Image 1: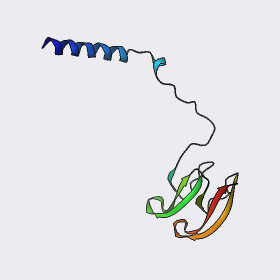
Image 2: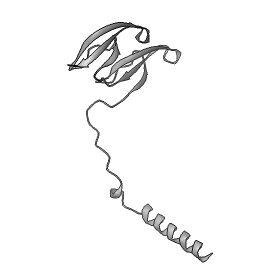
Image 3: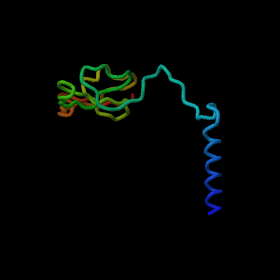
Image 4: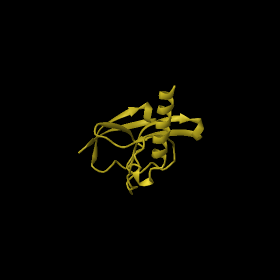
Length: 112
């Protein structure tokens, strides 16, 4: 019984030390930059596409009052919807196809 009580007291003391640690001991957080946020996900059509991102899919979405777009950062060898104009800097379109996932045409982009 005494051993359990000593262990509990020791844990309580360590917990108190951790709680009393100065804020400077917290891990550093990277400072915010002016660069575009890294984001991928669905947004309502008509919402501004985050800077540097492209539309890769379009779907009917009653929650958005019509359609929504899936946006992400561009990558080499990616199909993007024709609505993703302008083409991201440094990329070129190497193929075009009819794509129901884009409700029209999609473009295959490569870093070029």
